[in-house]
Image (cartoon, rainbow, N blue to C red; front, side, top):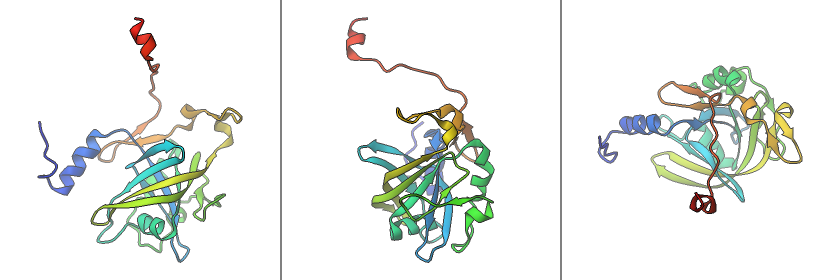
Length: 207
């Protein structure tokens, strides 16, 4: 079956992309507006893009006739925090999806704790096991109020109990119990993993 995305309606394009490009990590983003209001919202069009410099990218779709608060805040201040979502925080994360007006603090609404960041103004979410403090490198408008933000990660907070070896930077990833976004209202636990060793050309030729 061929789906010509150039010929499909926006809603149908989204359904195909969201159903096929899975699982997607969730960037639970905290920002601060120019007037000091804290905003929190999750985005699953997100991933890491490089390590030198450490780079992340987030796709932020339009709000109702305007930029989403997250996009507006990042574009005006240049700073944001990506908090990763553990299974224990799923309900709170989902509540921060609510279509609240810009003056509402979603962290307070969801009963979450805003913890001061180290290098940027937006707070991190204390209940999140991993938080990435970021500064915007650039942004790209890809459609009406649809924005891609590329950020440089300047600090990473990892809850102490998940750090296996601080000097070697070893993290107990499985113990984080992070969840990922699927399609519709679906999410995925990170509890089913298998290993594949990356091949080398020398080994392949020697088989």
